Each structure stands twice: as structure tokens, then as C-alpha cells.
Length: 548
Image (cartoon, rainbow, N blue to C red; front, side):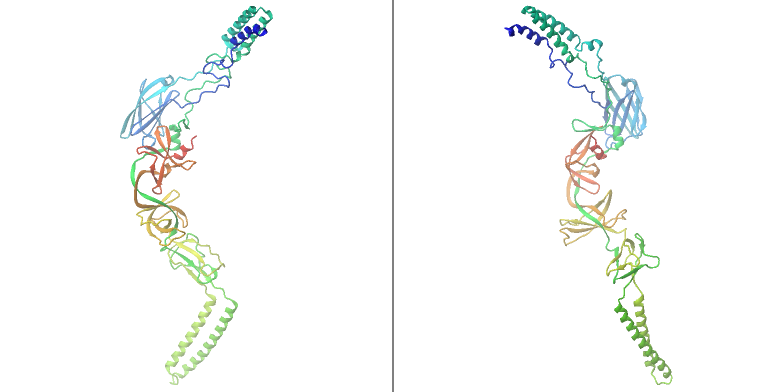
């Protein structure tokens, strides 16, 4: 019975209590504070022809116009730009780096504007049409009134309170219980008030007030939702983005080989000691590294060491020679006194003189052997490439004291894991330098399961040193079609995929996965992943890859 009597009050409570689920109006979320709208790029438009590419961006009371070469993306700095505007024809003022300013007070008025730009540069003239859409500025939030502060739910909350009070009273009277009627009136009145914080009028947000977000404040480079990269022209100027139009062509297949710089064997040599000994400097000192020398120049001396037994043998030999010389000298003196009388033949006198001269020469040579060092002589013309001799240093037999090379005559030794026919041309890449090579020959004996191939560097190389490692691109007779692009256009992802950036529109770039093969030291051949006639970034691709 009590439940049946309380049923009217429960119905009034349910019907008139505004639930939390339906208290928020369409387009509002009262669970979290409202966030300002995301910034967007400046109102802009673009147009292109086969010669020029134009981007116009509305900013304050002016239009900033950027003009580039369509194929290369180079800024056009000395052009005459005339624009047909709603207020008549006006000429844009150049400010350098391919950027032009056009005063336009009418851009502060929202609307759609069709414009015509005439670009004249050198002997080229193009008419480009574009349209600017100036959006309305976004409005800020409405601040609550004094009435809304007292009744956060507004008139709807006040009406709900009164209706609940009246209906609760009527249901209580019908039930015949004054106390129950009073309880129903109190419950129906309190529930809307307690839930009034959830009522919100359309277009109101009862969170903290937010400042108005002006349109066009996010003109920065970023990745778009579709994965492409938006790069404003101002940023492209800073990054020096350059492009080319890909063209199909047929090239000879190229093989990439490891190599290193070696001296020309006909223009280099070693200075070695034939016997071990102590080094000493020639007149003027030891030649320094990089010193140019000529064939036959004395570079150092080697004094062989003498052991005690050797010294004893030499002294004994010297004594014997001195004794023989003394005997022959006396004999020669006696023969000279007897020769005029005919007692001694003239031939015997001459033989004695020759014997004495031979003994003296042998004695002198023995003296020089104990004192004179061995000279180290340059075998070829060139410069000192290696060698650090020190006075008093003991050199071992066959030790290399100096290495002499001709820096104008250097070779490259590459290693191939397959037999190659005589190549027509080859290049070696060393850092940012490319060296033109001429084939000299290939070996027939394996060296660590590889075949050595020798190339001569054409011309006089600069900044090249013996032993430097290079990458050799040897051209073969096989041909294959593809798109030749500079190596700077290739960007490798974190997973190792080779990609390029296609310039799909004036300020938008898309990544294209490609399959490549080496072509030479500066170029690669795109075999798959890119169609012909596309604009590809060849300078600044690494910078675009870092945009997030």
C-alpha cells in the first residue's frame, strides 16, 4: 500500500528530473574544458604554368606572393607582377628572394575573390588565375549573465523548478497525504536545482572562458593527415628546396665496388737499406714529408755497425797490407837504381809499380770501409709520402726508410667478386668528390676470394691521399631503362626503404618509395616507384624528411 501511494511521487520525480546524459546541448561536451580550434594556414591560393608557379597568401591588409620556376623551384627575383584585384590593377612590390608584396585592404572583408596575375620575367610572360577565399573570423565564447550565475540552467531550469513544484503538489493532494505532498514538492524542486549545473544553452560553455582564435595563424611546415608534408614557400626559401622533372632514359648497368687509392707503380718507389746500420742525415738534414725530390738525390746515410771480431780482422788485414806495401816500395826503389844500367828490365820495373799501386788501393778501400756510410738514394722523381727517420736510429736490413710517389699519377685498386670484362668507363666517389677513372687491367689470381682491378685516375687529383677508401662505379655493357636522379634526392627511412619526395603542388610534398641502382658517383637510377614527368626534390630532401 505504501508503495502504491508513493508511486505518483516517484513518477513526478523521474519525469521532471533533467538527467545528466541529456543536459548538454548539441555540439558541447561538458566533461572536459573546451579547447581552442586548431590553427590553420593563412588564406592562400596557388597557380602554375609550364614556366612559373605562384602562391598568394593573405596576411592582415596585404597579399604576399611567392613566384618560383615550375621545374626547378628556384625563386624568380626580377619579375614584374601585375594583379587584377577588386579595386583595379595593382603592381606587386618585390622584396627579394622571389617574394612580392601587394597592398590589399579588401582582404580584411571575408568572401571569395577571383584574381588574375600577369608575371613577366626576361622574355617569358604568363597569365595566372587564382581565387582567394577569406573566411570569417572565429567568434569567441559568450560570457554568462547575472541571471545565468544565479540559475546556471537559465530559463529552462527556472521553468522546471516551478513545474515540478506545481505537479508535485497536485499529485500529493490526489494521494491525500499532506506530508507526502510536501515531500514530493520538496524533492521535485531540489532535483532540478541540484542538476542545474549540467544545463547549458546552445552556444555556451560554462568552463573557463577562451580567447577568440584568429584565422590563419598556423603558417608552419607540418605533416598533414594524409601523410603528405606541407611546406610554406617561406620555409622552402630557407631550406633551399630544389626540384627537377624526371625524364626516362637508357643507361648502362653499373656495378658498385670497394676500392682504395694506390700509387702508380711506374711513378713511385721505396728507399730501403741494403744492410743494417745507424742512420745519419745528409747535408741539409732529412727531407720532410711532402718535400719534392729528384731521382739520384741522397736522402740519408746508413753506417753499418762493426763487431769486435770484425775490427780485429780488419786491423790484421791492414797490418798485412802495410807490410806488403813496405816490401814492394823497397823493391821498386832498388829496381829504379838498377834500371838505367840495364841490370833490371824495364818491364819488371813497371810490374812492380803496378803491384804497389794495387796494394795501396786495397789499403785505402779497407780504410773507407771502416769510415764511409752507405748513401740512400731516391729511385724516382716525386714527393716524400711517408718516412720518419731520426739521426742515430738503427735501421734493420731491407727496412723502408722513405716512400716516394708522384701525386699527379695515382691509381685506384678495386676488388670484384666476379670476373669483369674491360669496362668502358668508371668513376670513384670519395666524399663529395668524383674521380674519373681509366681501366688499366684486372688480375687473374684471387686475393681473399676477390679479383683486383686497377684504374688510373684521369687528370691531377686534388685532396687525394694514398690508402684512402673509395667506392668505384664500374660501367658494364648491359643497358637498362630508368629515371636518373642525383643521389641527394634519395632519403632512407628508419626501416631502410629508399624514398624520394615528389613535389605534387606548390607547397605540398609526398613521399614515394622507390627501388634504385647505382649509376655513377653523383646519380642513381630509379627502376620502380616513380613515374616519368614528376617533379622530384633533388636538394633539401633530408630537411623535408625531418619535418614532423
